[in-house]
Structure formats: C-alpha cells, structure tokens
Length: 599
Ligand code: BES
Ligand code: ZN
Image (cartoon, rainbow, N blue to C red; front, side, top):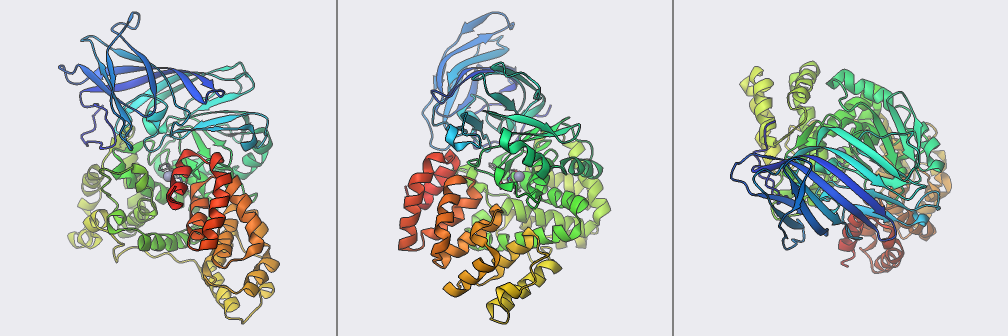
C-alpha cells in the first residue's frame, strides 16, 4: 500500500519509518473513575531498516509500561519517553524498538479530561437510570484515548475487547453484534483499514432496532422507536448512493443516536454513524444529516483526506454527494431549498472569516485542525464540485466520481493528488478555454467565492421570502399568511427572511400565530431563539435556558451565546445559563463556548 507523502503537521507519528498497520485494543470502562484502563497492541511495519524508534501521538494518557514482541508470544519491556505536551498536539510517545520487533504493547489509562471522550451522568441520558460514555476522535482526539499514529494518512484495521458494567452495551465503528448478551464483555472487529479519526466507541443503555437487512438504529430504549421511524429511508438512500457511486464497501450501515450533549450533528464512524437526537423531528425534515454521514462512506471513509488541510476533500465531496442522494430520494425541489439556505449560510460565513480561512486548501500550520471546521470546506467545496458537474455534464461527472472512488479506495489523498487525477481523467478531455474558465487554482488557493460559483434558487423559498416581506411591511398579518403547506425548510427561510430588528408587537404576533417559542423542531427553535435574543423578547427566555442546558450540539448553541454576549444584559444571561449548562457539555463545546465568554 502506498505511504503518505504529505507531511502531517498535526501528528508526531513517524509512519514514513515505522508504520502501524493493525491495533488490538482491550479496555475496562471505568465509569467510577471516568477512565479507560487497558492496552493497545500495535502491529508495526518497518519501512526504513535503520529505524529504531516508533513515535506515537498521545494526549493526557498515563502510560504504565511498553512491551515488545518479535514472535507474538514472548514480550519484554522496552524503554519509552513521553515527551512534553503541546497544547494542540499533545505529547509524543517515543518507543525504542529492538531489531526484530513486530508488535508493541502500551499499557495505559485515559484522563477524566480526555478531549475525545465524554462521560455522562445518568441525568444526562434519556432513561436517567444508567451512565453513558462516547468518544469523538475527529480531528485529533483519538490520541486522548488510544496511543497511536493519529494522522488521517495512516490506516489501520482493529480488533477490540471492551469490558463494561453488566447492564450496559458497548458499540464501536466496527462489526457489532446487535444480539450479543449483556455479559459485561463485547468484542469487535474492523477488517477494513481506516484512519484513526474514525475509531469510535460508545457505552450505554442501548437497544437495537433493525430498519432493513443491512441498516438499523442503536439508541436508548425510549428513543429507539422514534429514531427508526425517522431514519426509515436510510436503505433507500444507500441504494441510491450505490447506483450513483458504486458498491457500499462496509457491509452494514447502522446509526447510533447519542444523548443531546453530542457536540456535532453527526459523525461518520464507519458502519456506525453517531448522530445527535436533535435531528429526530418527527417528520424526517432533518434527515439530510443521514444522507451526509452515509455519503462519507464513499467520500471520507473510503477516500480520505491525507492531512487536515485537505479536509474539504472529505466535506465538500460529502455535501455534494448528500445533495445528489437527497435529489434521488426526496426530489429536486428539496435539494434546491437546502442549497439556497446553505448559500446564505456560506455568504454569512465568508463575511465573518479572515481571508486565509476562506481558502479551501487552508493553511493550518500551528493551529488546531478543529479551527478548519468552518462552512468553507463544506459549502465552497460543494460549489466547486457543482461547477465541475455543470461544466462537463452530469453523466460525465458521475462516471468520473465513480472511478475516483474506485481508484483511491482505502487510500488517503491530498488536494494535489485530486488535482492530478482530475486533470488526467476529466479535464484532459475538455477544451482548454473551458478548463481555464474554471479558475481551479483560484477555487483552491484563494479566499472568497469565485465569480463562476453556481447559483442556488428555490421557487418555494422565493415565495416564502415574498410572504415574509409582505408581513414585515405590514401588508398582511401573520395569521393570514398561507403557511399551511410549509415544510421545515420553508419555516427556516421565513425566519431568515424577517428583518433582524422586530418590534415587541411583531415578536408577539409571530409567536401567537406560530408558537415559535415552543417549536419542537430544533433548527426552527434555534432560529427563533436567535431572533428572540436580538429583539429582547422575554417570553422566550425560559425556553432559551432549557434549550441551552439540554442541547450540547455546538452548531445549535454557539450562535446563541455569540448573540447573547453582544449586550450587557445578554452577557449576564449567558454567564448564568452557562454556569448551569457547562458541566453537561462535551469538551469540544466547552472549549468553543469558553472562547465566546472568554473563560
Ligand atoms: N465529519 C463531520 C464532523 C466533524 C468534522 C467532527 C470535523 C470533527 C471535526 C461530520 O460528517 C459533519 O460534517 N457533521 C455535520 C453535519 C452535516 C449535515 C453538515 C455536523 O455535525 O453539523
Ligand atoms: Zn461531514
């Protein structure tokens, strides 16, 4: 297998000399101490004969011992040095190798503050009876719970044995046995080589509900039925993606619904997407997230960004695929709505970001790769692919992408690798003038949005914007608006279209007519609460508080804190709410909200 040529600035690993190929993991899950105790056994391959050191990434790990074996039978302890910790990268672990070493075993414990693990009290779960824990490794948090070469350019297979309290079930981003008895011990195997950021574990009171022969949902008992109903189109999405981009290579596709503190919408852990419960709206209106995480089974998990500056290869491709899946399953009008809403989001993001952060092939040297998680890799990346599709035609672009996934399957590639392949396989057949007009270099290496960016337009959303303007201009009352046929996306458009500044009467009129303060849809409630903060609409404050305490998904809560701190009153409210909410948030959300409140 070819080795990464790109230097990964976010790993201390030395995979160019000694590369890790397989992991055998064994842990006791200690809820009492908020720790994983156990061993990671790393099978290594020496690429340089003279190499006598294996260098790994760690963060906040206590390493008790390191052993080596030549034959898999006899183990002897070896010298290791855990270096100084860098605030972003963690600490390198240097292990001295004997000439014949084939495997290295690290005995270690995680810290209660591990950045990649959240430990939940019973009260933070749906059932309130059992504790819960889950990991979130992307971008560079795997190193906080496993000592490894934590770079997306290094792929490993793995096996794991996980010991849990007896009432609980463990699941991983691997082959899961849904019918395994609650024996206190679970075993897993991931046969396909994956990058470290896709290794994932969760333990809790979990039940399984099948949706089709190869899709299903894991969730707490009180959530599993509604989750299965919400996500019932997953099989149709898989079939559509396979028709477009070739076979699904991971056998099963299951979803795990986490408690609401999960800091993201979804995480594409292979074979087992982790998802926030805030997308269970009751009407499938937010299942675009499933299309997105499923699409990563091709763009990201099969063909992976080699370093974090190539993150747009994961996310831009995935948003493009997500839209194509949505079009197949829910039709073009729905895609037009999502694309139009996102186009506005991108414009706002570009207005907010410094120039260097508007670049797809972003320079992240000296920075936390999580800083690169803006709308740019997602939405500007998607627009570039859309532009390519429009330029060569859908049929040609589809066969190009299908071949791309085959060609780079189970490999990690850079932006440069993509450009070479694109030029060879697609652009070489296109007239020079047309290629030049693409301005590929400007798309990849320059800030802003090139003038040839495709436009998004939705007739349905245009009609909503017109209605919002008529209401804001006093031409019609809220009650008289024709909102009966509106979908969630239309409500979101309505809330984005009304003026930022509204009178107290207007706020009350909207709330009386549409019950926004009690909105069950997490995205609609989010936009309403933003409007409420901007306009000092006190009746929404109790909901604001419960929303910020119950939900830990960063995308839904951070903009609310951002808006609150703009006024003195708001800041006081934010501080008071955050004092109560912070203990329940995930380390990733804590670090973002700490920044907002300068804590
Ligand atoms: N892989 C990302 C989540 C991620 C990115 C976690 C970078 C940590 C670092 C996932 O696929 C994603 O993009 N999730 C989005 C949802 C989506 C529909 C855009 C999210 O969580 O909001
Ligand atoms: Zn994604």
